[in-house]
Image (cartoon, rainbow, N blue to C red; front, top):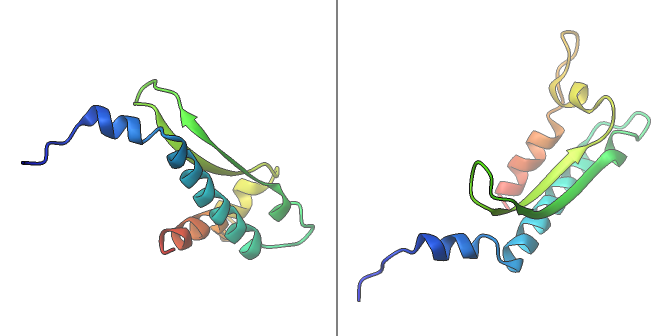
Amino acid sequence: MAYRKSYKGIGEMLVMPGMVTAMGGRANRVAARARATGPVESGEYVDSFVVSSGIRPAGRGRARAYGRVTNNARHAMLVEYGTERSRGHRTLGKALSAAREI
């Protein structure tokens, strides 16, 4: 019997509760790494990471499970990407790269 892929089946798998849990777990690992390695002056930056997960509704693409890490500090973009006077720390970028290795 030959294997035949089922795009419908793959799509169903990508929105299963276990996939949402897996994406949320990965996002939590990324956030933990970012909190542990982020620069600390006042503590606002490292305390402002927020994790969310769920199912991205079908719109331009298909519905998919996701895990997302954001930072709500007003200066988060400046810390991540830097300014013309200071280099960015790439805290989230580095944390995401580290999570790929796990």
